[in-house]
Length: 451
Image (cartoon, rainbow, N blue to C red):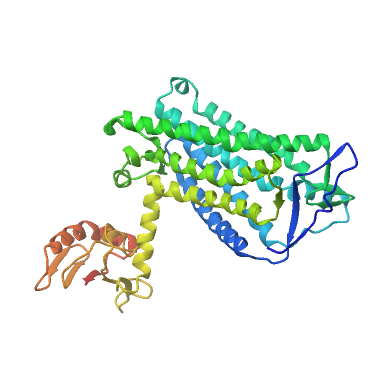
């Protein structure tokens, strides 16, 4: 990629109190390239996925409080992290202000990539503590039973934010303040500062990749051990029992728990592997640069590929959890089924409200429904959703009049016994349908089921 170096000559440094840095910056002359385009795509998709997951998690109020709070922490920090990365990619070059202090503040917080890493670290540590809590809970740790939920949450959240802040602060040393300006990286740095930066690179790699990776994989191993040792009928994974507020009996029955190797806590293993690969790429690049094997080029192709890898994990995490958590998975399935039934042009599934002179303006008296393949919803839900149970007859008619029981009449030559099943379901649902559509008692409500 053509680039102009912002680093000056790398010759010997005469001043004994200064030393050359192991990083420098480049300015792209061709933007965007393939890496930039893919990165922006992942930033947008990651933003949408994490917003969706966060909104759904806000609706989840029933279940393990610790897991709910930690998952929300992951998604909300992911949202902020992706917004910062997206703004950094689509906004023009930084603006210089006449007030030197403002330029210093922008340089220290933004140009140093302090914000770039801060919320990313918060999200990582929230995921690590989520894995730890799942392993301790499934293992039946005795010490965990004596620690109140509020105390555990306080401990987890304190560690997440204090640790994340401390490990990100050394980013301030990576910029050079010059009379109110800000260079991406100085050619030379005072040796004590440079020593702190070297220490940060090595410690960051050891803590972020090695230690966190070992912890997450060990937690995954404990979950695997629990799955192997616990009979399926005795497996109680609390992630199976997360629900939206006031779940109905039907919803509780439908949200069937997953067991054995499909239990939701097993997601720690693929997430942990993805975490080590994606975060290890950038942290490993910095580590190798610190050892002198290469040079860390901020804005270069390898560094931007590291950002791309970080975004892979940001996208993979909400996708995985929406697949393994029953409460999120069934919401996604229901949403796709509803969308498919509404926009499937190859299937004449439609809902029409036909008004007759007897019903008055704006009041529905007749519903004509062309049935498709979508299943599981009853006629009582026609007012808010299109899909209903399939009827394979050529024509079926049901009507209800004020003060009379529902009358069901079959047209000649029904093609299967599903008519009887449909008739039974309609008889119980017709009154609820009338109430939902707010049809006056004096008005006929006719439902025609046509294939």
